[in-house]
Image 1 (tube, rainbow, N blue to C red):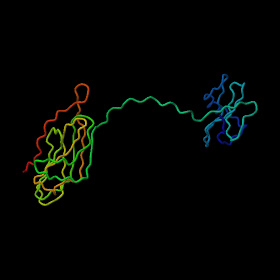
Image 2 (cartoon, rainbow, N blue to C red):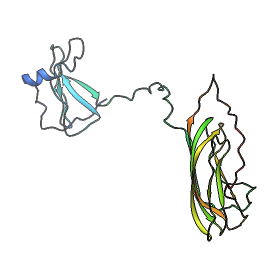
Image 3 (cartoon, one colour):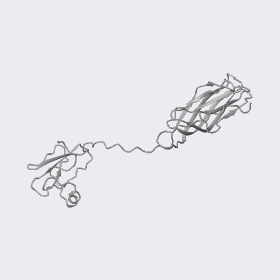
Image 4 (cartoon, helix red, strand yellow):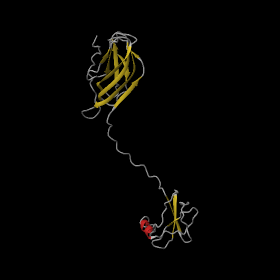
Length: 246
């Protein structure tokens, strides 16, 4: 240990013994068996790694003089005390308890690919699939699609699998080939590891009809279980996707 101290205008003979200062700092340190009362201050505009001070053994209490000036040494007969301004880093504390689940569990996806919807009314085509859900339950699902609809064609789309209520939407017939927006929302049941998706059909098997950009979001709204473990949901068979206006 050792080192220089904070610069100050105080000299080596600057013993700090004024009554107000002595009263303020006397309780800060009691060193050795006889006790050494802190009678100086290490406060300065310069920060050092260590503080060095002098005290005269044999007096009780012994006035403690902080060496402020670089290169200062203790007077003859005094002993030197040195301590660090910052102690060693402590041990890492124990791991905290696991916090509660977040407010929502769900997945989301976006799509910029063009997917033809040209299979006709009896051949549903999956146009977008989201990530697998982490938890079994009922999910509220919302989605949007930009669809290029060929002239005179119809398009119908729905969520899958396991829709617990009708989620299909339709657009058309188009008076000319044009872009249309479709929004879907509803509830579907999913087991952990399953992925929500959007499937679509068209009326005329027209290769011009296709999806463009879109998004898909699913948020868990019910994951009630009976007993331990993850529930396994029984999916009701989806009703065939149909275009009602045909």
